[in-house]
Image (cartoon, rainbow, N blue to C red; front, side, top):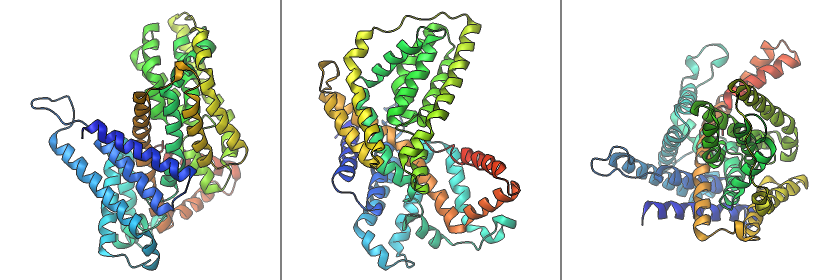
Length: 448
């Protein structure tokens, strides 16, 4: 079996698993989240090619591929250990077996390596610092000090409970985010990305700096579908970056505009980034309220970006460009129907998981309404692969965030941080809100 066929098999299994859980029979947290992470690890670590003899550019070397396979097998074993024995965990709470500890250590190792490959060193360093903090508590000063916890208690917190790696962040990735990325991928392979670029061109293309403004508007529209900055960049950037370069913008500026616009897509309702779902889950606020509250900040974000583009284009003396043919928009306008279905379900108070499920189902149906958007088998395969690969970074970041959250819960540092913020704010509400916002920005930098 070739690497692409294996990846397609894993991507298909991921789609089937998440759709079954969302629309037919939900699984318990200690089943759904480990299986989700195992599938994402498989897709993320096996999406590589082995180098040929004397080839230094075609892909990773043999050792890299072997290590990747070893990590995938370790994660599969750790997930299987929980899936088959999650009911027995309740009976031996506080008394982990040696195999519990072995698989727990393997899971932490795999999460750190997956995070390093997909997100970068910054989040890995934060996780390692959190692990060190849990172990070194008695030796720390002031508010940072705590009783300290040994490796056994730490692994029990991170692996054998829903307060660590299998906590709310990864739950959000498993329950909501993957399905929304799948939703965006299905519409993309049917021409949704082209539709949004054409719409953006009609809206902003005739103004000064049109190609860059088209990129900003298209990324905002695409962000309302997927909530993933990576998927957004891949989808719209392939079209908009060459347009910006041809219009006279430097490659660096074109890349910066696309990266900024795609990152802002996480703020654009109705489908926002993982942080919005985590916020709704932790605060027990309906997601639709979070999405409504984000409308004005999202519009302000893109307004600021459009002003920056306009003034840059004016300084460079760039002229407007003609808009795309309206017939291209009309031929694909029906692809907006699934987005409307998601909005309706959320407005009715249904869970984001249920809204995403019906969004995916309706997207698969709507694409067949017209010949211009009717996908072939290869298109569906490409959509499954896009969804799988686009979800890996989210799952990795959420699992890594679970390590930090688990340590914070175990050591009580979260409560002490709240006390510190209140003390620094002098009991005043506005300074406390500013400090909380700054802390949220810093802690959320690694979360997709």
